[in-house]
Length: 75
Image 1 (cartoon, helix red, strand yellow):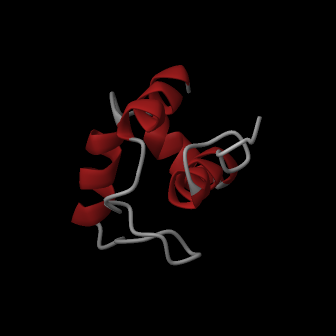
Image 2 (cartoon, helix red, strand yellow):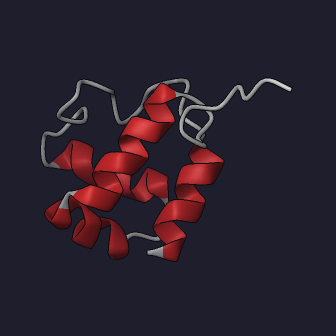
């Protein structure tokens, strides 16, 4: 069986976004105050942030939003 995930995430974009949310303290604390990933994404857009420091867009069409919602809810 071949693992088709990226470090346990659906793809590189989802992994990268999750990595930044979990490992950047100001972003982590901001995410803790949000009820969903989409709420976090909209808040980031309001302050002028459109992508992770690695260049992955917060609104990339390949993001696994359901999994990112679970991540934000667990913080």
